[in-house]
Length: 219
Image 1 (tube, helix red, strand yellow):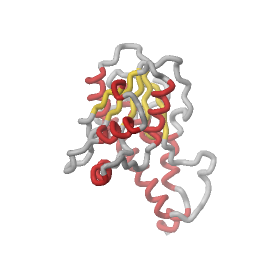
Image 2: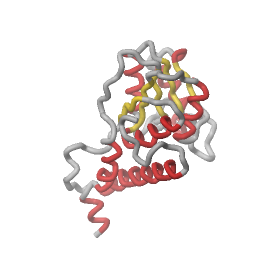
Image 3: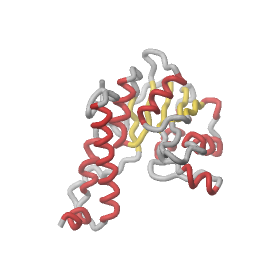
Image 4: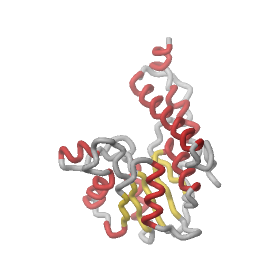
């Protein structure tokens, strides 16, 4: 019965939706930005190294949004943050793949700070802050997947680096949550992502790494 229910109903989307709906999908941005930060995630470092070309997985919208904002805000400092979360494979980092991608599409790499030593979201924020040393009152945008945004925003706020949420890579379909369709693999995949993100939120909250279990859009 449980397997049938998971096959028929988008249970994963039900637990992902509160995370994805927490922040505006089309945020109002200031006319001038001090910086734009994007968290790593979609880069497939192992396949990229194996085939000697950029290979991307889920969440490629992060890099697309980053490139779009970089083009429309030439005054902004750019930050890509992400190393490798693998315990075994450390030869190539997410930042290395991103650098190759950005170079191929013509982005001026001198504008970009690449942080390549972080292994998780908390280290993304800590190590980027150490490299960039943002001033007080700056206008910074943070790009990551929508379901990952609450945890990310909470971490940056805890460190005293207020950022504007720019969520992308939505996995839920707003207005279509009460439906049934036969797609067990997709529903299980979404469920896995949702459970992992809620567990991550709880763990970061109880260890003091984020400001709230579910941070609001405005601090």
